[in-house]
Amino acid sequence: MFEESLKFFVVFFAVVEPISLLPIFSGLTQGATREYRHRMAIKATVVAALILAFFALVGAPFLALMGISLGAFRIFGGILLFLLALEMVFARESGSRTTSDEQAESQRRADISVVPLAFPFISGPGALATVLLWFGPVHLFQHPLIFLSLFLAVVVVLAISLVVMWLAEPLMRIIGVTGVNVAGRLFGVVLGALAVQFVVDGLRAVFALHGA
Figure 1 (tube, rainbow, N blue to C red):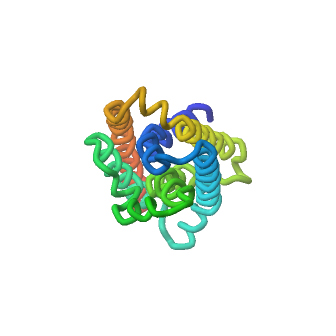
Figure 2 (cartoon, rainbow, N blue to C red):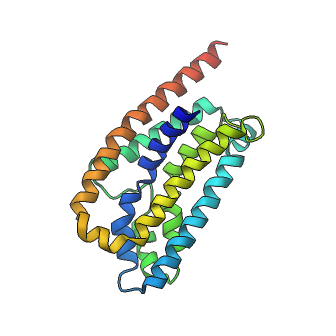
């Protein structure tokens, strides 16, 4: 259980990539008061936690209702995470998180906590796919300890994201854009390898089901 939770933590941390929130949050809150920045960071973290908890609880039943096997979703989720990993490795603006129109709208928005911070930056498609992949086989009432240990990893990553947003300005002065890109590339390499493993596991599950 500990190994699975640790592995999930690494994957989820790489997907959410709290370090990438530094330039985003700093740019969106430029010139704002400290109270405003803290309020937006807390609200974004809470909303993201609610979104992720919802997907963790009802994601697997929804897939079953739609007739989508977990193996098929592993393949799609692996491909999605692999594309996200490529963007991270090449330090490109992630199209899987937000669009230029959404970014332009966020500059005009007084409350940036829900959009674009909570979604799609923190709990974006990659994070939701990761939650569905890991929580799919785990049911709260059948495996409560495993479920809670996985969700604890989610909470830890969200707490790190909150701290990063709180300390965005001083951290940006220390790390800089180059440091953020280097960290993103390292996380992208790890995420890319794990994404390929997801696809392999999904193919095995699909072929095993077909063979049966």
